[in-house]
Length: 474
Image (cartoon, rainbow, N blue to C red; front, side, top):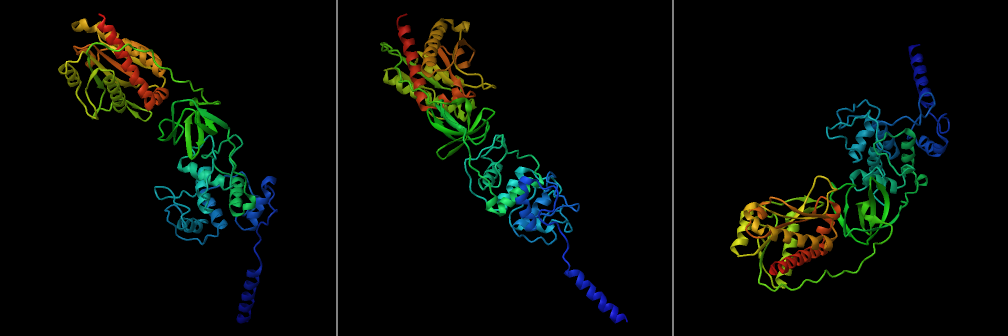
């Protein structure tokens, strides 16, 4: 009797094992959105997703990181056997442990720096891009851009790869919303597109149009702000294709150069190139003169910096050009420095005095906390003890200032008095010139240009010649 009952029990178990467990067949869930039904049914038939016990799909539910790993694991055929994982916060008994560990071993998942996976956290659209590009081996990029994504960042690159691969095309308003959570419907569509190319969407980037650079030199940066490194530059008249503009920064391409530029320096038409005009002729200097040219800062003292430029380099470059032009005009020049060295302020004065110079000009570049400050200004000193040379210093600064603002087209900030040491405690008629502001993009683009440095140098030379012609008539 016992043997008979045992046989009956075994037969019953065998019969139960052969009866398939009912799942949700494609088309049986009541809330699958019509616009996504083909792709979602495809995933259901391929056992990538299942519905809830009440036969709903719940398309608007957010996807957790564990659910995402499970769906991707099923989509690409990873081993889903539950087991111990590399993450302390993913238990072996967790439903997605096998897929998570398989994804780690396949190089698809790396987790967080604290060696956790945070399986219950909602996955963001930006995180999703990393998973999908690795899972479906998407590597191609195109001129894709979104207003809210820095396309040259690591996240921007994987979003580009995913969109170029046809898994998504962002939102109609030109955003991608990388920090938003992703719904079951959105994620399902992207997974289906990764599995089946027939579902993929167009990634064709639609440019806003063509623009032209209207600055002498325009930095192309890695991100939409001056804090990002320059990765190249454009010159006046260069044509760029603009793909997006946000916060006055344009995402552009120019040949193989792709990055961000300030939209303030782009125009709809090429700039009109005016033929160069010669500055007013200056009569030749008839007397014998010796002038000291002081390139501000140097060596351990870099001076100001901004927009990728350092003051000591700009002042030396312009000063050496001034030296060459003055000597060509028959004026003897004494330099306080000709390389990246640092004479003290008193040593600079002494160099001029010991060389029996009759004039002293110190060349500098400016900086301010706000980018709005711009323009050229010149200084002299009227210290009472040195008043006999005060008028000569004023004339020197004035002549140079007039020439400079006309030659390089900067804002005229005027001729002012100040107590800078090299012009205050200097027995020679002396002027200190601030060429422009390194903190201002327009000024900096000029000061960093060899063409404008030559224009500035010639203007300083012409101003000095004006001064000498005035002085020789006194």
